[in-house]
Image (cartoon, rainbow, N blue to C red; front, side):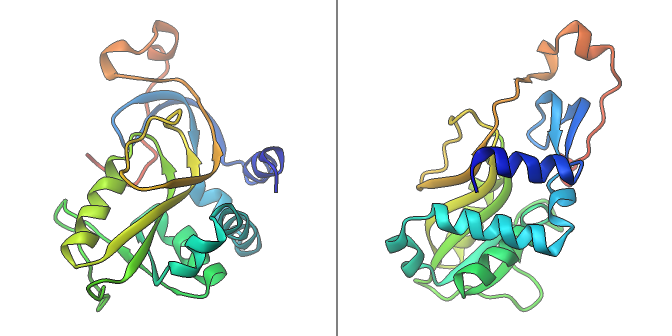
Length: 193
C-alpha cells in the first residue's frame, strides 16, 4: 500500500474528521483521525496491519517475541499486528492513570517487544507504555504506528515505523487560532487527561 491507498482507507471509513479537536496530548487541531473507525472493519484492519508489518525491516520482524499496545487506541491494531507477525499481542491499561498489565497478561524478562500504537502525536502515551513494559523486564526493540502526527518530532528512544505521516497543524491551548477557537472543541480520544 502506498500513502494514497492508506489515506483512501481512512476516507472510506469516514475516519478523517474536521472540526475543533482536543487531542490526547492536550494539543488542539482542526483535524482528527478516528482510527477506531478505520479499524472497525476486520478486513481493512488486517490490510493496514499487513502493510505496517511490511514497513518493518525483515531482521527486526524476526526478533519480535511479543506485541504490546496501550489501550484503548492500540488494542485493535496491536492485535492485528500480532496476527501478521505470528506472535501474541497483549495490551496495557490505565485504570488508575498509570499503564499496567491486567487480565492475566505477563511479559517475561528479556522478551523483545514491538510497541504498537494507532496514532503518535507527542509520544507521551508510547513512552509511558514503554516504561510499564520495561518495569516488567521487557525490551522494547521498536515502535510501529498507523499514523505519525508528530511531524517526525516524537522522541520515543527506539526505532519508529509509522505506516503514514500526517502533519496537520496542532496548537497549544493558549495558541489556538481565532478561526478554530470559534468552533466548540470536542475530545474524541480515549484518554481523559
